[in-house]
Image (cartoon, rainbow, N blue to C red; front, side):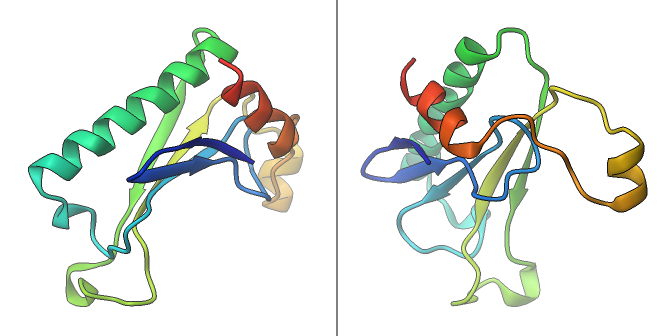
Length: 121
């Protein structure tokens, strides 16, 4: 399910993806807080994120997406049990009755299939 891997970051399609081609981008070095990145690390993150988004646009042209940075709260900034990451959620389909009523998502694409497509471009 790996989409991209370099010396600093890894991006993959989560096993229990809620959305087709959903991706998670995470630093290889443990960090709890996104705001702990220095300028050099931030540039490497931006480069990795751009690569992921370019792959997404090549596989799903004109797709809309949301992304969320999950970071530790300020009170727990040096947490050893939390690793910050960025979640990319393509908006391929709207939520329907099942998703809204049951609180479960229906994903139309296996993460292994999505990762293979994203890697290939």
